[in-house]
Length: 187
Ligand SMILES: [Fe+2]
Ligand SMILES: [Fe+2]
Image 1 (cartoon, helix red, strand yellow):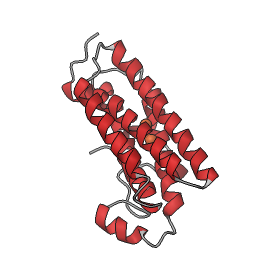
Image 2 (cartoon, helix red, strand yellow):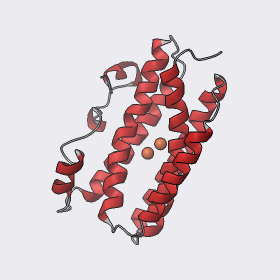
Image 3 (cartoon, rainbow, N blue to C red):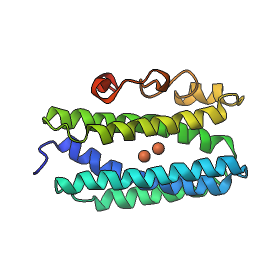
Image 4 (cartoon, helix red, strand yellow):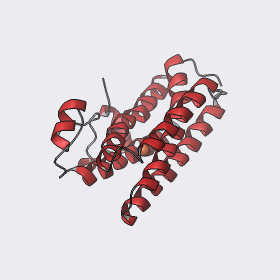
């Protein structure tokens, strides 16, 4: 079956490649931190991102969506640059920008779910929901690491993400089940 939804097709291709960028970035991030607990947590997040990439690919295959060579190249370069930069920009910024990035990624999966649902396809709901929630957990992890840092208020003002501002409307403390998650990331 072919997907008649150009926006969804593009989102799938982009997410597939962006997960690689994220995984590369976390390799650099994990290597750059000295604290063992932090290193382990970031390595686990890297594994989560590789798993997401596999899950997205499985969906793409089902609808004969090809991997984008352009996105693969672009996100490869982006991931490697971020990975390297983690060694030179200090401790705070890699945590901050990882959290901000994750905050945006949450809605990618909920938007995919909405797009599939608009085509009458419900079979990917559970996995897309699970991936969106996992990105939210990543966001919360990174935020918790920096929430008491004195640089956070300044960065929050500048980049519109932090303790008060999130780029999504999911609250892990009061989580909706998958069947009631339509209000997540509604524009
Ligand atoms: Fe991911
Ligand atoms: Fe993530």
